[in-house]
Image (cartoon, rainbow, N blue to C red):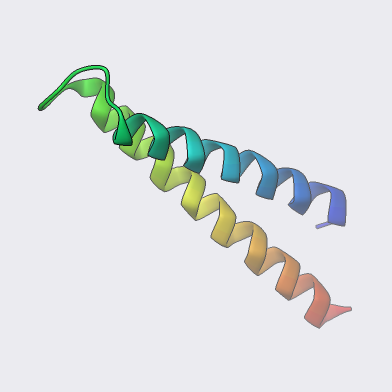
Length: 64
């Protein structure tokens, strides 16, 4: 994976994690609502993408 690819993955993942976290901090609908579940899924997928990007960076640095 090239440096450009993992840096784009990192940037998109950080944006997703931030957007999901921001919505969960100030939800539009209180209580159980499907939008809160979507925001949580976006946040967790963003966090997983950050971990994946960091692992790809470390793996690439070790392999090089």
